[in-house]
Each structure stands twice: as C-alpha cells, then as structure tokens.
Length: 384
Image (cartoon, rainbow, N blue to C red):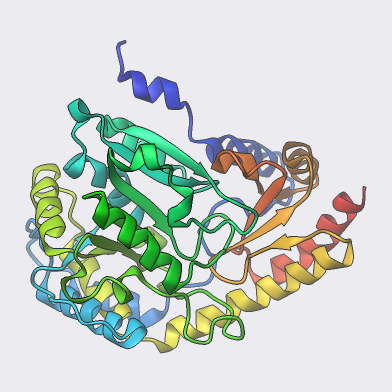
C-alpha cells in the first residue's frame, strides 16, 4: 500500500517503542513504575468532572470552531490573573483538542511548501514540532541547544532567517524543564517580527514550577508581545495544570490574524473539542486553587527524585519547572535498558533529538508513593 513518504521517513514515535517493552513486562507479571510519558496519575479534581457531566446535552450537536464564549472568557480571565495580560476573547482565543494536535496542525495554516518556508525549533525538544512541520511540507531547521537548554535569538543562523516562517519555543522546556526569561522571549520575538515569521510558544507546562525558583512562575510570550500580540501565539493546555489529559482540551492565544487563519483551517478539519468538554475546561481555567495544589504535589516528587540522584552523584540539569527531570547519565540507551529490566521506565534523551544524548527524561507522573518505591531501584542501577 502506498503511504505518505514522510510517514515512513519519520518512523514510529520513539517513546512508543519503550512503552511497548514496558507493556510486555506488565503482561508478564512484573511491577512497572513508568516515568516515560507525561500522563499524571493524580485524580482530576471532582468539580471539573461534575461540570462536564452537567453540561452533556440531551441532543448532541456539532460544536462551533471558535468555541463557546464561556470558555474563551475563562481563558482570558486566567491569562489576566496568571500573566497580567489582556486579550480579546472574540479574536485572540481558539480552543483546541489538546495541545499536541494544535502543535502538529499549525504549520498547515502557514507553510507554503513551494516557497521553501522554514520551521525552526530547539533540540532536544518535543518531537511534534518536527513532525507537524514535515507533514506540512516545510524545511525543518533544528537548533541544537546549549548546556542550559534555552533557545535564544542568536542561536538561529542568519541564513535561515530570510526563509523562516515559524519558530517554536517551549517554556518551561520539554524535555529539560529549563525556563526562558522574558528578555530572551523578547529577543526571539524581535527576530521573528523582523523575518515576517511567527513565534509559537508552547506553554502547556506554565503552571508547574518550583515557587522558590520562580516566585511569579515562568513568563509567557503574551507578556512581551504587547497589545494584540502581533506575531506571537501561545499554546495552552489543561492536561498538566488540571489533570485533564484524557479530556483533550487546550487553547491557542495571540495574534488575531493568525488566530483567524487557524480558525479557517480548523473549520476544514473539524478539530473542535466538544462543548461539554469546553465547559469542564472553563471551570478549570476559572480556578487557581487546584492548580496550586497539583503544583505542590509535583514539587514533592521533583525534590524526592532529585535528592535520590544527588546521593549517587548524578547531576540533574535545569528541571525546576515543567513536568520532567532531566538527568545526565552518560550512555542514555544503556541506562534506559538497565532501568527497564528492573521495572522502571524512563525516556532516553536522544529520543528528543540531537543534544539529548547522555541524558534521561523522567516524567513526574507516578504517585508520590511510587516515586519513593522507585528511588531504591534508580540508585541501585545507577550505582552499578
């Protein structure tokens, strides 16, 4: 059967390979503690599920691409509280079926494959930046990040800038948890505006951080883009902030012209979250207390695991925000296999692109009790 060549070129999603091996271990009766995928185990706050159940209609009808006014107003209210920015709910907010599909599909609205448009992003990074760009027909440019894993304007070569259409950044960064400052975001935005490109800021981990390190939380591109967010889009998600991974709900916020283009694209694809899911998301974005409670739980896990690595002389890099620990181990594939045989599943850093070699990513998704149980296994394998 003939398929899109890009599908064959990219191959299987790398983390799926580790997941398949972990599944075989479970099926053979082994206990498995899984740090590989960012899908937290903590229950979704009950008020969110209750809101969704109450919103399920007697007659099901198609949702509108632009989303409900309640959802858009809730997102605008969240942005005002969290970042101190004002956006127009009518023209600057668009709901998505989670952030992954939004990241993947965005290049389809902006890339001219006949013009050699470039989509650039830092590496190691979220693999979907590349995958969405490749399927859209873009030329992909990977920027190998430095030791602090922060993307800066100076990292983008001058010969790329004239063809640059989209530049992805992630704050806090996946997979490392590094945080980009407002100054650095301003530099990236200045670059993309000068190149007639868009700066796309993946901010789905923005509410997970260590309060001591970041009292005001990691910044948003919306804080530096000014009124109307010209040339900038922020990608938000309820998945980690509110424990709603399975609900598949997020939002894109920013430049009204770009939002209008994405709305046209998404009208064609029919990629719209159900209105009862939007009601649940509106309730989640309207409440900050549950997000603060979840942030504390993840902070406990981060402290517990970082201490375990410190005790065996293994360096944790960045990792003071986001959902992940990024750990320097030497041969990441060998250590991943050793841990997997002992029942602990992690992701080798090279799965996230050039520059990731020699590191492990641990998603802080097992429960606190499971993290405690994993400490002895981690330390035993790493000492070996």
